[in-house]
Amino acid sequence: MHGLMSYQRFGRARSLRSDRALARARLLCSDRAEHAFGCCVTTLFELLSDDSRFLRKAFRKEESISKKYLSKKVSTFSSSGIWTLTSS
Image (cartoon, rainbow, N blue to C red; front, top):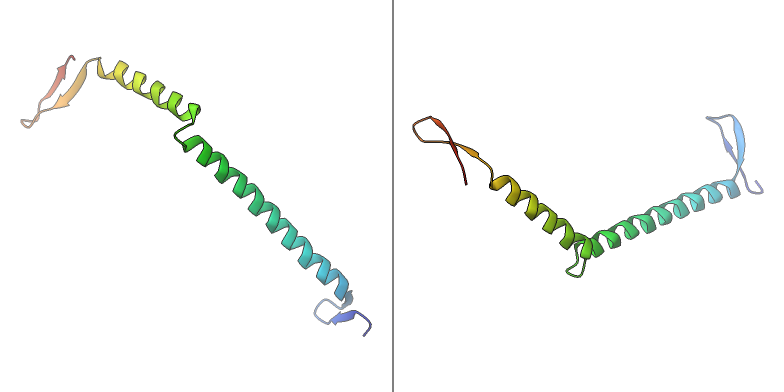
């Protein structure tokens, strides 16, 4: 057959070499996807590490927001079914 294979379903001949090229292209594409995923995971771990300034800054900002809202009036629901407003 000299490297040609007949695909009766499609009614045409196709080179076996092109099949190998397609398989190689798929493999390279998946390698690139794995590399990109690895880069994302690495970046995530860097952000979550103890040495990360970004994460410490984000938590500090979140704490200041929490303190700001906790210092305001808070509504609570008592066991008797009455809503009360308390000021901290």
